[in-house]
Image 1 (cartoon, rainbow, N blue to C red):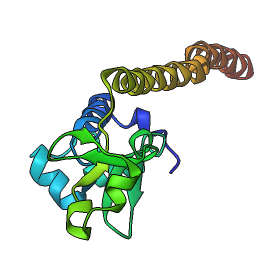
Image 2: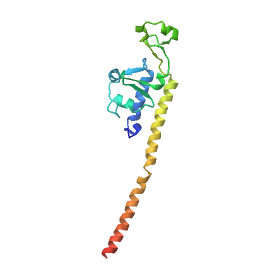
Image 3: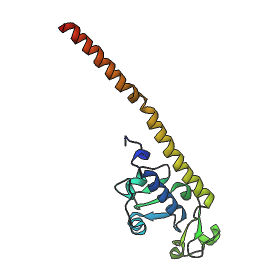
Image 4: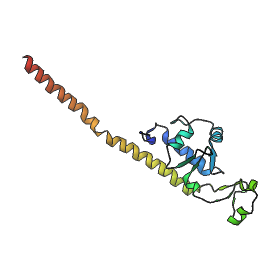
Length: 164
């Protein structure tokens, strides 16, 4: 990808923030793409699909091609010790003692408000940096018009001198 994903439109930041909030607080740490579409009920405003948005932001999201799902990296780093039904943390021994069916109800704990705030602030900061960087790269545009005017004057003077 050549373009920076943060420059993908005016709504890119809001889409990234929405995805972080949902994936950070949802009871299961990973969500399948089909379920994601049903749950969010809308397409992102800055990408063709949520999957595209996730793939363009590997600094926050991990996409599994094998399982066709996505998760937050920070949440993925946690151990599977959160019972989604009771919303309680269980020990490793308790998890090992569960049946396979019951183990499917164990996920990685949702992010705390502090962790969520850190991720949201990181996204805002990255977005701001890329916007500032893009503006810095355009310094030559302010020089281009005057230089073209000067070139026109010189060219006009040369042509006038040659004809006169």
